[in-house]
Image (cartoon, rainbow, N blue to C red; front, side):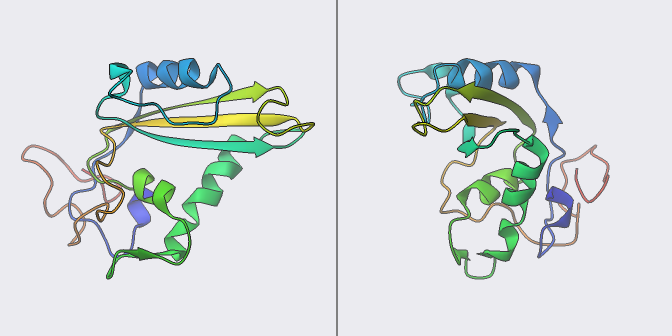
Length: 157
């Protein structure tokens, strides 16, 4: 998804999986509460951003859920930085400065959706986008503004 942003990003960082962020995500959703962490209260979440959603299904498909959010570029208009509907999760996923992500899925009882089997899904990004009102990246030829010493791979630094 990050390599296919339109218009192209000039300094999209390569993102890698983080076991630490995965464990933090697991810890956060283990209580089956559908709310984001307050980094002023729980400092482990400082400079992170979290994608959090509830999914009801007999079987949960994590990849298809992410692909659903990956389809949000159709909703996001870079030129005027507006969304046709909600696209904050998409903007977080393509925040150019993010270099790490860790995700977790938790099967919850009926506490989230009464009488329905539900899953709480969380992905923690670091660094997270400071304000979702910002554009998620700067445009330009792919990798044209990568930090010194970085190479370009799949349109990412």
